[in-house]
Image (cartoon, rainbow, N blue to C red):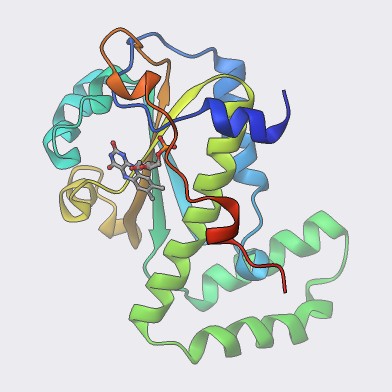
Length: 209
Ligand SMILES: Cc1cc2nc3c(=O)[nH]c(=O)nc-3n(C[C@H](O)[C@H](O)[C@H](O)COP(=O)(O)O)c2cc1C
């Protein structure tokens, strides 16, 4: 199937059948998150993959009691950085130096550019910028899942404060940005499984100028 056929196949699954997805598929989806490009390449987020059923029960009210919380195979929480410290930038410079086999000193100009770009932004702007990066990864993960016929639900319908508190994100300078449920649809009880996809016609959405 082409990518667009996979995108046509997928839908935001509301009811899952409780079946666990194979570890290899999960790893593929997570690898697609790791490979997702981000602004400056700094990957300003951390990803928590929640399998633990007790923790999922605890999270359910924070996820507005959406049934995916429990019925999905896995719940992926994208937690964005709340701030960018010099030490985080230095960790990134060290990673570039190690990966590309260059001296960290050769990155001084890039380091100043990164710090200069980020220091011009308010704490709110930094948080918004970091959160936007998680949405790029969310998109990649959804395409990866669909290409393997794994169902997924992007989720913004949750209390970030409650998720932050349950996963103790704030003490790691993180904030719950967006969530992705993964698993297999239960077409018998999910009315959305057979609903037509609602999208604007091409020319109402896109102008080629
Ligand atoms: C960022 C984002 C957040 C969403 N949050 C939820 C959610 O919390 N619960 C839910 O059931 N669907 C959620 N959706 C699903 C959308 O309603 C759905 O993607 C949209 O209606 C298009 O339908 P389709 O994905 O089934 O094609 C979300 C989608 C996106 C992209």
